[in-house]
Image 1 (cartoon, rainbow, N blue to C red):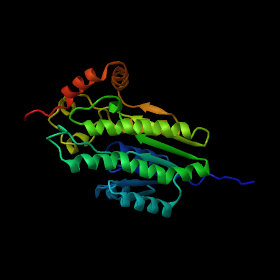
Image 2: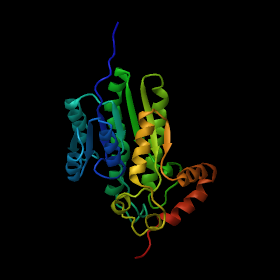
Image 3: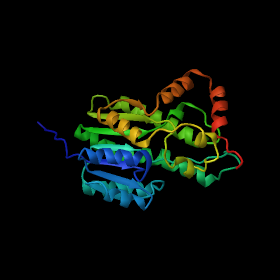
Length: 262
């Protein structure tokens, strides 16, 4: 008879140098769980230095070879018991004329391809050990057509359905899949996406990333299927998007995401 043992706790968080990812890493550290903090920015080292048991890994996960390297680096530390696939990016502006092919495909590579690659590499080991907690960061906009951030919304819709499919497959295995659905959050998202002139950036209330990170951590570790984090308005907007026709939601979304003259 084979006895399966749960390995020592180890978390992996992508997009961990700022925003929700950094807050997730802090939650793990606060609980005494070593965490591999992954980001493409130098600051991941400084942030990791502040957390006991943190391992900074600076890699650009848009590149398939970087995901492979991350898997190797994690294997050197130990088998992960928790995995937060959180890294993501967006490009604001009209798809046809205001953005480049490289910008849009970069978003697909990070938000979609790297998520699939990392999940395929790390989740099977969790299943074999009959223990694991996995989080995918989707968004409340995953159910809304996204004028002026069309690829981003579509990528979040992919993550929502991808996570839901794996969740059903893994029932009873000891591995749970949680989908995080944040609304607008006070991070560097809008600056990085070139969306600082939009009403979404200037006029819509933002949730505290620390609150979102704590809610995401609690839901993930308790094995909940989905968490719509932050303000109750996020739940209302998500439900509205499920009930209102796409063409109406697209018009409403355009009003807050269309770039304005400065």
